[in-house]
Amino acid sequence: MLNETSDAIRAQATGSSKTLNTEASFRDPTLSVGERKNVRPTTIPLLATPPPEDVVQDAHKIASSCNSLEDVRDALNGFHGCPLRRTATNLVLCDGDPRADLMIIGEAPGRDEDVLGKPFVGRSGRLLDHMLSAIGLSRASTDSKYSVFISNCIFWRPPGNRKPTEAETLMCLPFLGRMIEIIDPKFLLFAGSTATARLLNTTQGIMRLHGNWQIYTSPCGKSYRALPTLHPAYLLRQPDHKRLAWRDLMQLKNTISTERL
Ligand code: URA
Image (cartoon, rainbow, N blue to C red; front, side, top):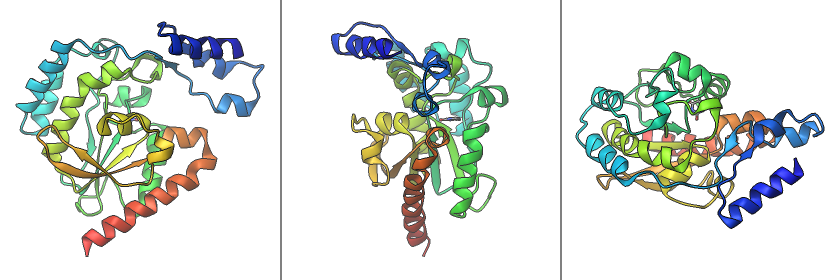
């Protein structure tokens, strides 16, 4: 395992395309529980392969002509640029109240989401619902001040729940950007490092950015207040960090409450 890790780190430094299969490490009986907990059970792509430029250009063109959520859904159903759709069961677009003041953006659908065609319906979705309810918000509410709208950076499940590659995210990003403009929320909550890195186009880590309000600029140039926080799936693996997420939620609650006055 240690050899595999250092090989992978070396591969990243030297630009070779080897990947680190952490699934094996996750099950490795020679590791302590603590060591296993720190490893995400996925295959992490170590090299960002740029997506074909024409695919991203197409995605931008198609997305910018969408004027409603249904347009975005239809456009994605007809978009064959992202290879993930071939292995996924369903398109997973969104859930919640499209008139909500708060839009939450996660990473990518997992197995449960793929089956039901809705974001955040598995274990991490249940934790997300608990976190929201602790600050008086719910995806089931129809009052825009207390409801939420939920989507992801990626609209099809990556096989085996692996982390989406940068290329896959860049292909889906124009549709997400257009959806943000259509929903036009007052606030964005970025759940986890993928949403934070991609939407803010930053290499700064989530541990540094979480809890600090940022500005997201949409494809048509509109600014939105965005709060990065830790992903619920990460919190399930690192329950000690729930207190950090709790502080982020308080930050969110205070800002939303001030806006409601
Ligand atoms: N994790 C996510 O980021 N999104 C989902 O929809 C489910 C789990």
